[in-house]
Length: 77
Image 1 (tube, rainbow, N blue to C red):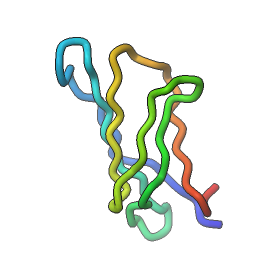
Image 2 (image 1 turned 180 degrees about the horizontal axis):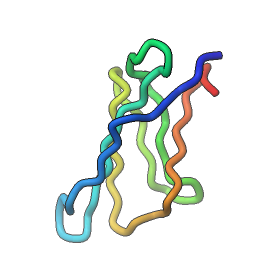
Image 3 (image 1 turned 45 degrees about the vertical axis):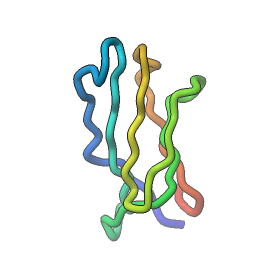
């Protein structure tokens, strides 16, 4: 199994009033290539997203859901 790594995650200013976003890229630690369809979520909440074909995801939320962001992908640990 390969090891996944998150990188380039940024927190932006409000998209709309009281609406925020986090954008990120999930990459393979060895190759550096994006991991398609990786899941990113705040555990215990309904805030989550699935990465696109390049491993890029965007989370949108109204209130900060927590300080732990969990990323997972099939075939990675």
